[in-house]
Length: 256
Image 1 (cartoon, one colour):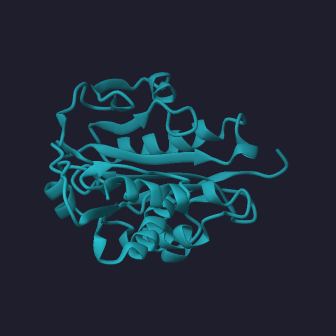
Image 2 (cartoon, helix red, strand yellow):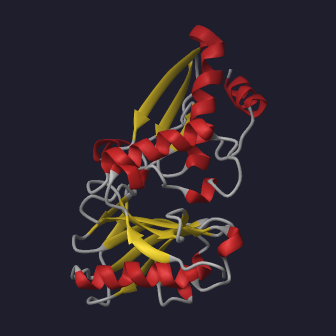
């Protein structure tokens, strides 16, 4: 490695504007979504999100880790206080396999211990390219809730077990006109935010045949809907990530 990489806490709006380096390895296809997410982090830093960046000698972020205390964490679980909740972490692909992921997580874990955290929770997936749960098992995490493609894992620090239960989703499938498109905007992932923004644009093409609702992620929406983010068409979860406008039109047309 040609330059030294250090871990820095994200402490200012300027540093938040370097967030999501996962989208900065190449020109991102979703610049608008990236800007929205960076602005959200800047506006909510120290409230709903905190974080660390891996930075090279030029101050360029090459890795990220975002989290929040359980009392303020925006994930669809009821969690006892005193726990750190990991949202996401990533090291740019060209920097992987250099021990930087371990360096980044070690800084986070040391800080959590210093703050007196009981442990660390993370909601992981079964996707190799997206917070795969096996990465956390090898670090000593234990699965405390398994919902198939998504799993909640816990790393004990000062307390061997944790009280954490999933919220009950309240969005139910419905039939009839007009079709309702509900977008729960999470803002913690440009990949998902890009799809949500595209849905908002395409849904307007259908005029009065579609009722469009957008809700910004907050403690209130978590309690109301029991989910943190997603695209729901007539109450059914549909579309995510790098979807196309044609796929969005088809998903809405199916309900019409």
